[in-house]
Length: 266
Image 1 (cartoon, rainbow, N blue to C red):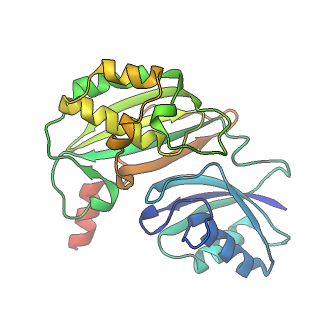
Image 2 (tube, rainbow, N blue to C red):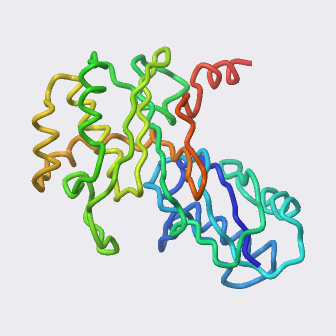
């Protein structure tokens, strides 16, 4: 039977979503727990896409194929009892036998959190930048990413990718207190693409790059964006959308640093 899983995780301790040899991954931990709970070998857990090492997820979607009579809610509870604290299954539901978390996805959205002040508590969830950033320049430049572009300059080489062209539906910036939030919505994403998009926008905000530089990176293969790659700590996979689903136009901090600080001080 096939099930659809909605999963949140803090990626700090993991090499990313995808299973790798000699590395701790979120997918690998879920497979390990599923095999224990269902007493089966080689349980399939496939996600909607991979995330880089250190990147977090508010709602990753995966499908799981297992032989069981357990109800979805019982599956959720049993697996959560075995999972570490930094991985949590939010919901489990029965899925169509042909449902595929990755192939059926229509879009993915990520949110990147930049802190404009030094913080002692939120470091695992933000990129603190002490330089003054021009929000207006960043916001204007962000719109140049929208549409279909070749993002070869913004990604590490990956032999599994057939094309480096990606349709970006939307790039939005928002101020929220001491934070700048950047939401990127696209059909799919290449390895390190979002982090390099953010990095280039930050350099534009610093005044070290211009919109002309960004356009150049989109029009011609360049190794320069690699040096601006944003750290993974501030990046969150926000949502995966499927048929007839819409993304809320409003977005907020993925981890509210102020609330996080308050919880730690109690």
